[in-house]
Length: 62
Image (cartoon, rainbow, N blue to C red; front, side, top):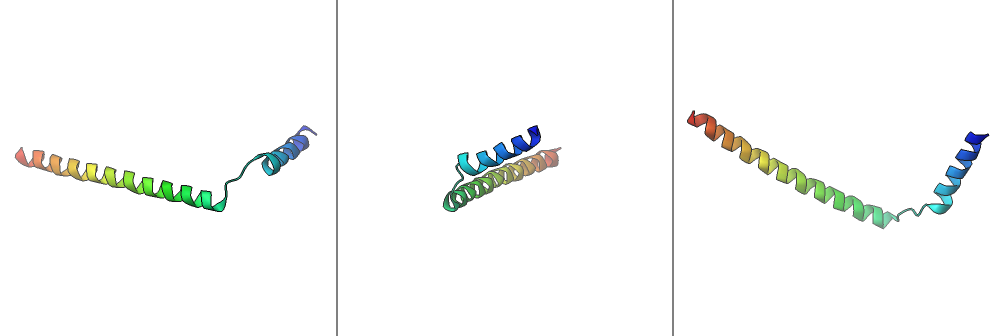
C-alpha cells in the first residue's frame, strides 16, 4: 500500500507541482551548453598543442 501511495504522490507532484521549461528555454539552454563545450574543448586542444610543441622542443635539445 505504501508503494502505491508513493507512486501516486510522485505522479501528482510531477504533473501538478513541477514547472517544466518551454521548448524555447530548453533550446536556448542547449545552445549555451553546446557553445560552452566547444569553447572549453578548443582551449584544452590549444593547451595540449602548446604542451606537445614545448615538450618536443625540450626533448630535441637533449
